[in-house]
Length: 124
Image 1 (cartoon, helix red, strand yellow):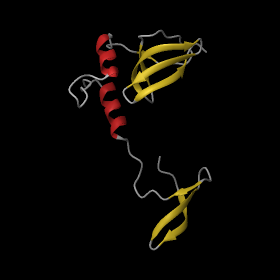
Image 2 (cartoon, rainbow, N blue to C red):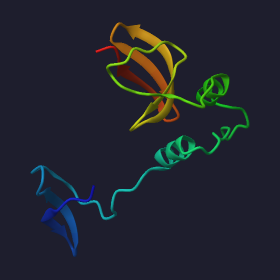
Image 3 (cartoon, rainbow, N blue to C red):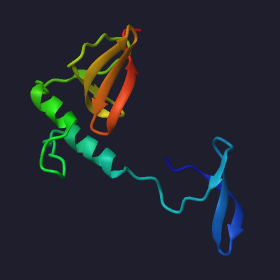
């Protein structure tokens, strides 16, 4: 999000330090508006129906291999209330499509997304 800021310090003719008017925090000036990273764009593309591309080395990554081994036509929408098992394909609103790789305990699962592995809650 692009939020209103107040300039607190200048170096020459450029802002150096700003104060966020929304959360009242201070941070260095960021001259460019926030944009999606390449990894986030790729995750959205793979979720949007485009095929998952192989890694630069020419062989599929672990993430791609797990997705190819599973039926990903209808992934389960992730909800912390639902229970999952290893091998389930999930669709997360922030991280995109992922594969549950391990059950850590009764309330946590390890899910491998294109951007990396995340620990998520389940069965709550």
